[in-house]
Length: 610
Image (cartoon, rainbow, N blue to C red; front, side, top):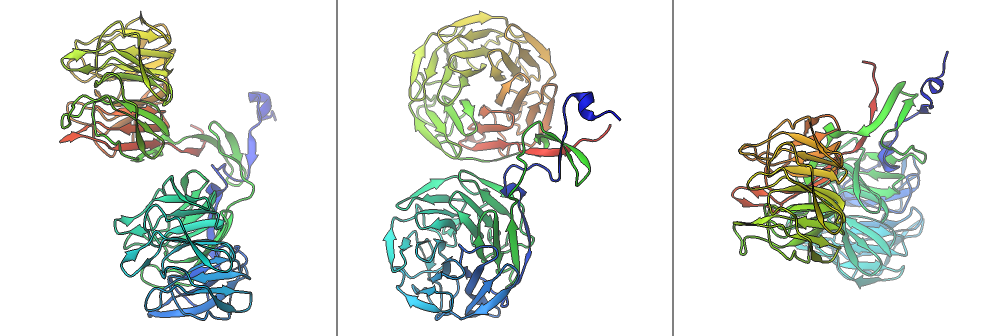
């Protein structure tokens, strides 16, 4: 029998499991040995391991405070010598033979600290601030305690334990109780989630031994979750989003949180220990019943990294697989809001590094804006303004190398072109034709194509070579208020208006425009993203009424995918077909500051005969 490699010219790799995005993405939860005494609000030796740690203190059912101390050997819990002070909502750190318990609640918040030496607990120096529900991380000689509360008061306080005493350090950026924590010692810690008077939090902060810095947020707000690991690699599991416990688990890779495999049982206020490769949570409450359950988290030490375009045979499931971007499963999620609400805004760049410039806001003074804002993947920062305030202008490039051209401040239409170098806008040579409501695209501020616009409607196309504009072959259909994406040699023009909303799509090959498959929904004033003429995303706009519809182009045809959360037109767009950004726009009764992020994940799809 002929080999596949002889027929097709390459060998299909055989794997026993599907490829995954990361070690944590391949992780899963399994049942472990239960506590001897069911309880919630458990403290633990967090720097212990999945096969050697301990859980202590907690709250029993019916209501009673406990000083119980149990050690885990990877299979079962054994009761050891009790603490001196019974309490719950205490915090813990260290390992099974060398642990620390601090703070908590008896009939009020306490500052008591106790040290475990492998056989007994000894009272040592107290916290400076009595409190409970703190975040915690570290060893028995280098621990960080942060946040917490006492009565109605929430704290941002941070204290460091050096093996002898607690020292107050710089506070968290915000007060919070029941935050998660991860860290090998007090010098490098991550704090995340929690609760404050404003509600449940997604906030994540990183501590460098001196101060806290806000970093990227959790995907799901929560408090009282189980957490373990270090500040560059952590796991957060379960918790509460209000009245309901959760199963959701998230993994931190040093930059971002990613949702991974869920707990088997929704749970909160558990004890926890371990690393992002092997950890556990024990005890807790669900939904109002105190539990003794343990779930163990294990991520594979060996895994195959997922990459677009992979072909492989899964020998376990006996299936051929292809790795592709799972467009049908993608969705929009909330991002950081613009500092200035506006419509008629233009954008450039990618999802994590975008530029928003110009626009108008009929409710503000002045109405026509020169404002520029920079997005870093989570929030917008105001940077230097355009030289010419205007709306509905064209834009292209990156967050450090963009071009802004055309636009208007009715009744005036502009030919003005400005170049952005990452710091300032500089006026350069004008378009040949003054116009607003045009589209454009390009890789940076030295290579751009501009097309369409009006009024009156125009088919004019011009290319920018870094110093001047040149008129080239026109669009087949004159129109304004259209979408555009791609680069100067491979561009796409879609939708627009010539008296009614259009669905025509045209591709540019560097010389001329060719009509291709139409949008499913005719529209104008949409947001746009994409890298070339075969990959694009069109979102929002108006068909006569505002729409939230999103369509994806795969090189052949447009497909309707998940809608924007906020219906709007005259919005800005940036990014690619798989990682895009939508911001601002018109959302009656006024201009919007909302930002949404479009994210498409890779997925392993079974190849079937047809």
